[in-house]
Length: 253
Image 1: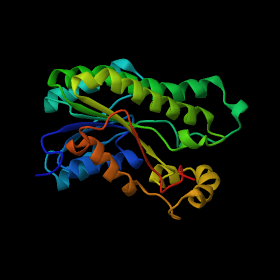
Image 2 (image 1 turned 180 degrees about the vertical axis):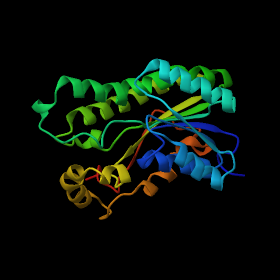
Image 3 (image 1 turned 180 degrees about the horizontal axis):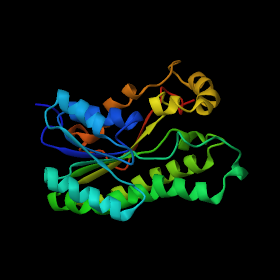
Image 4 (image 1 turned 30 degrees about the horizontal axis):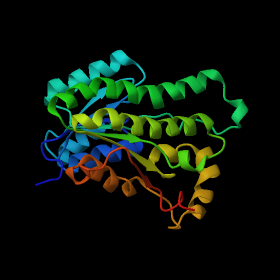
């Protein structure tokens, strides 16, 4: 039997980039997947369904808007009847241009926090009642190795991902009595299609990060999915409040 057979997952930001790889991996492990994104996820849902019948659906939504989040959760329950796994992946990163700490205007700063921090809170707020009712669930918050290293020139993003580490630890204490595991997955710098679209990020980060790693190579989305499925599956049932860093050994150096 597949590791996630009978489970239902929501992947925010699941229509493209690393999120699309998460959606594919969960479906391949047996889960039914709600691909939730501000972009159209119909293509990735169709791709998944071509391999795993009726395994995926997609909904467009804005993670920073609470009414939109409530509608997404309601649509997931109507379609699948339960929610077992929440992957809080949606975030602003690739469209941000690196700059000095004192050059970020308030509008950009607030939008990053709205999507990267407030959005996951809204998702947990409206998904958790369903997990509490069934006395089980896996919440996986996507943080970043950047929060450990203090990567320069991306201050709002790094700050938001540091917040996700604290969010994970505090939330695990509150949801633990209900049988819900809350962990974070912290990728290093990953060459995804969305990341490669932004040449500034590649130029500033790729080689310095690769040189900092124990494994002297680039990281790809495929390097993350094993850790994701582990945190989503019963293999991690006694793991909560933790952050699993998948970065080829960069944070260790």
